[in-house]
Image (cartoon, rainbow, N blue to C red):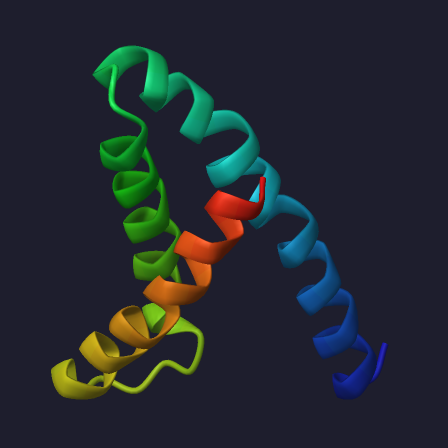
Length: 82
């Protein structure tokens, strides 16, 4: 399998697992545990955003922090949509 094919397969397989795991599985359980919808959304969104700091693995803490912060609003919107 060529590099381009691997990247495409990898992207779709990761996308098929990320949202169901964090938003579909973890979020409802956190809501029950915490009894607070917004805390659960924050935790699930933060975990999903934090996972994406290594998407482009560059060992600079400023870049990794920026990746997590930049992805966080997207994860909150995703959680609210579901």
